[in-house]
Length: 135
Image 1: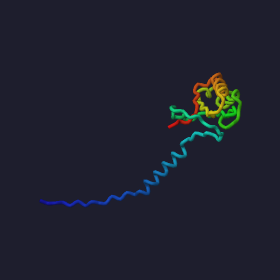
Image 2: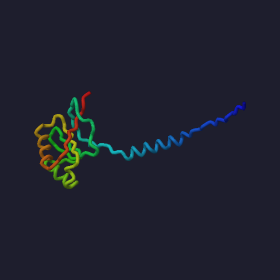
Image 3: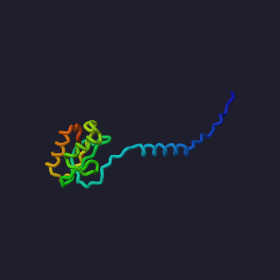
Image 4: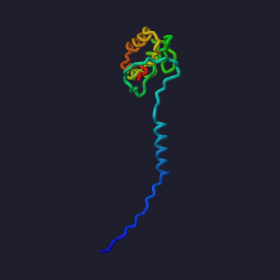
């Protein structure tokens, strides 16, 4: 009986190439991802026990401060002028966009209702309110 011996070659993995590819993929995802701009307007967000945690992909952010001032993506406007500005920027397509209201927890409910009413009368379909979720 003849016994054959097989020659086992050592397999050498080149990890440098794999690390290079992983870094390229990481850089690609960092550069192509979009982050939610929350603008640097100081507001105290309300805290809720339950809520929807998923944010829309590219919402239009409207901020309502404690003093009743409204901002559209960092630009100070009156509640009534926001609809006109949205129409000028996006035409009739603004009604299909998701609006994210960033409301200070100490803002008057009257100001919030006036803002929502103005947006609804203008034709807004999707209005969300940003809040912090308690644990």
